[in-house]
Image (cartoon, rainbow over all chains, first blue to last red; front, side):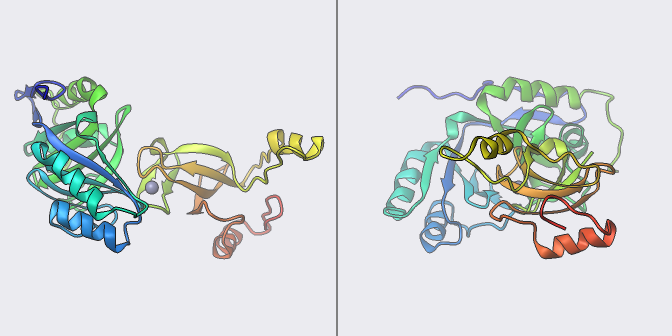
Length: 190
Length: 109
Ligand SMILES: [Zn+2]
């Protein structure tokens, strides 16, 4: 097997108003199907240990969980080295069901924005209300960041985890670095 | 700037998260139809000052298509509704009537 690496080899930027880090390899599985159906619920429970999340939410702990992507799509997160196994198990559970399970781990890049100014950095880039009353841990949002599609959630009250296309990883990292550059804070949420 | 609420995923976002998909409720005329019908299906569009119905896609979100009713003059969005319908829902038409009495758009009013 080839030696899998992340898009930017774990790039980091620590000298700004928030810390930007590329997240280590993350298992990601796209599941499309009828989210209200029993086989899908069963496959999700077996793969991630949680129930199908409600629209606009994610149930993620560490590198495992489920994110609600659209009315017929979920993103399953699992440890990178268990992806193949999880996909096979899900396909077994969903045999004969009109559903799709696809390993998209290597098609994506993940970043973490952390620190008290993380909200501010994100708010500069995404047209989303990121006031603490409007966006909090447990929620999940697909949107754009500057000119590229992205999705994010909050692992805790001071950090965001972003998923984007792997081919746009450098763009995303540069974008975050600029938005977090030293002295660029405006304390809008404090 | 339009603020649209996607009826598929519930997200309320500004228009750069969406993509306009042209006029709503077109009836398709394909092979075998008359030249006049085909021409009007391809080219003839409303161009209203006021109430208008359009298709939009939540392109930076859930990816789904939906319908929106809005005012081309004020950019007020009257409402959004699912793509799987041939006409705007009655309650939306009523809501528009309350704001724009006497409006009409193609066969709807
Ligand atoms: Zn949507």
